[in-house]
Image (cartoon, rainbow over all chains, first blue to last red; front, side):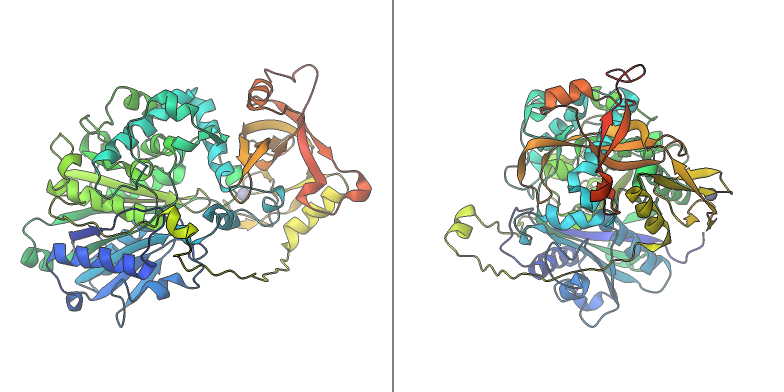
Length: 390
Length: 183
Ligand SMILES: [Zn+2]
């Protein structure tokens, strides 16, 4: 196996997703972390190490945000590390936490992910333009959305996917978000395809209702070794597999229609989990959906269907909450909100709640034993995957 | 969120809170300036642009001509060995139509970013640039621009070039046989 310990998730917490939080990043971290500890029945002093996932410093304008947030995350005077792979950070932080425990080095680890995007005025978009190459791309007057609009159009062109089909992701996830008590005000809703497609064009083919909003929030999970899990939890959720992979930052030199790095990350996680047929063996999926097309793109990268086939699964209702392969039953980033790193860890937490049957109105109708959370980010180049099971 | 949790912390601020100054806001001008070194590969690339030429770099391991050029091949992890002048014509790999400025403010005039695969570079070796002469409205642009459409660089006059990516103003559709709407 290559590692010492089986690792379980035994508690999770989440703050409400808001457009401009009155709370500081530290305060948000504290709320989520305390909730996860309470859920696990642990006290801060039971935690041996803390992992923080938070994406860019520039949003908050706080230098070394990992260190800044340590107090709120319970990382004070503890072994503490920050994970940072852009949008992939939230799921990567869970992988990082798994590593701490699987290695045999720690028995109890608290993983916290936070993003406070709204501090950056007038819009974090401007701060995020720094992802582009400073010589070749920024002088063109870039915008963060360009890269996604270009990828989306390439995906649509290669597979001949109409915009209306992609809009169905927004319809589904924004409807699912209605059942999420932490969803950001004004984000979930009952929308028609026409409303999604007809909303303001941001960067064609991306319209306003096909992109997730600016959000502040924090999420947390508690990860423990098998020994501790058996002692403190009657319903541990096991980490069955983890995978991560990075592609080239020469993003214009890749064929954007297919996320190969997600496939590699998924294969790594499936191998570890002993999954040979993900289409049959994965029961519920939280794929990363900051843009509507990304859910489809990622389902294909996760090998849950053939290339270009994800739109058909969507149209046939297979990815609906009561479908055969529920995708983003939480509502995802489109339906709940997108506090970058916290959104990724929220997906891990959602799978945890789904596998424990605690998801309430969001609980998928089919019985679930194995679930997957995935995130993606940096210069469209990182895939992070966690497979959980009971 | 678990059914066992009844309280969801997180208090949103209202627009009114901002308008009525109940939020502490500070403002300062950051004087952040950078003198970046372009490195061996891009120095030659930008010098080429000043001369109206686009240079790629060839890797003997995988036989790829790569644009943007680099001094090493990330696949073979060995040095690239030769400069190759590629053409300033190519095809649109993908494009979009932007109504959003760099700072997320709204722009009334759309811009058309694209990934362009240059002739003479290996397949798939696109660069990002803008398309021009393709219309002023979304409808017009979507009618005129196609993935696979042949394009040609429109350069700044030689005296105005600075050795920067903006020495190419934009890429314009190539008219005539093989060009135009169906590409
Ligand atoms: Zn090579």
